[in-house]
Image: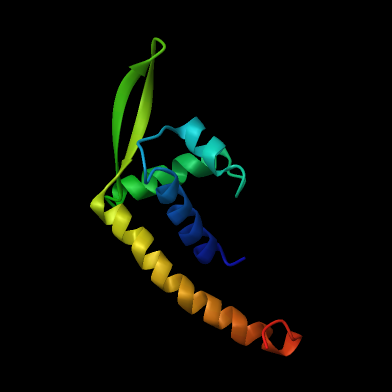
Length: 106
């Protein structure tokens, strides 16, 4: 898969994982696992990129005697999810065009 496309898809997946409630690294990985495998190093790179793009904010809180970073989606992050939903329609149309000769669609 094209690296830029994959990066964009993973960014949206991470945003979707924290859409309904603030979350932390291990829980994000656990929540995404049924859909996509993601390493810790990849996740933290994505989280940093999303924070720099102002699509999420970070707060630190104590949990079990240790500090834990919690991630919260911003309005810009929610907007990115909505944009992705619209973009996905175009991606599906391209897929249908590419596979039309395969007899899968029509």
